[in-house]
Length: 423
Image (cartoon, rainbow, N blue to C red; front, side):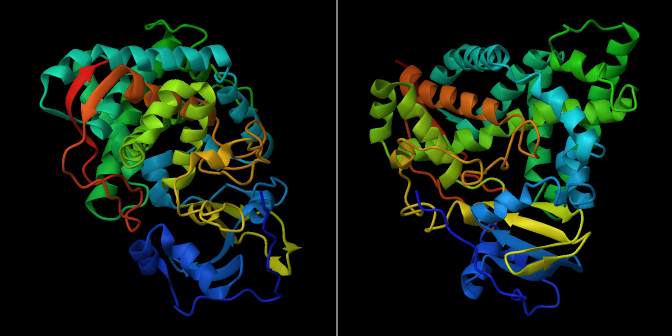
């Protein structure tokens, strides 16, 4: 695999516009890549929401970006993202020892046995709805996956959830994800969903702490409710709710990838048979290519902790820097034929942690790489096998396209499955 270098110039190019926020909203996922190709460099400067921003691209830039000595996450996320996607006070905005201690809380949930338990709950939830799917004319995979994942992860986390609650809780989790790149109604739906969800989870955490509600000691609910931060104190009840939602919400967000799995299996039907007959290796290659090829996170942000020079460029303390996730997955210097869907590119693949970065780069324990990435891969593998092995279905006329101008994007039809029957 070829690894690109970094183009070095003393002065990085600058966007001519006095502020590029509207162009970002218009260009969506392609905003950074379009400009990086225009300037023929891996670094350029722009202004977003009135602030000077340095934009980075590629695995060498990712290696620097995930250096905790150089970059921090405190005050890096826009307020509107904290009020929808992340919540205030969560692990995403911590640095140094505080981040390491909070991250360790999440990582203790990520054992092989616990991940397998969640996959089993997801598979069980999937099979439980098959009678309804079989009796329905059509089901929308994207919407169904949100409810299945919400049901499974709440059970796994120890969060009580009645059957009649599942649709609205799943809808709120999805609304928080759908709002992170939005303005207008989508953003306000996400903020309302965040308020409702934090209120709901805060009440459960409070009940567990007072002993009014039991929680298994191995569960995420118990782990987070009784976690002591570096000051030796329990997390504030609302912050504990934020962190528990940082377990539940990302799992529901896997529904975006499951919808794209449905698109990939439709566009490349030969992979159904390869999944059925090829074993775990074929499934894993397929899932990695879905994560590379189909967009979810467009970029991630951080702030310079202390001034430094790199690649001929100056990074001043406090400067906001964003790393191009989507464009790195489209870099022809790194990926052969990046515009083609080809899971075989992952045959014999080994990663240094900075090439395939849909959920961050670097080390899961030390760096700001998503603690739940292993869960994402495991659940995606299970969903792929269920779509290939557990059911047959038809895909009628519908719009499976997705817009790169919308963040986050998804297939426009949601992937409608018809005439579902068990294999």
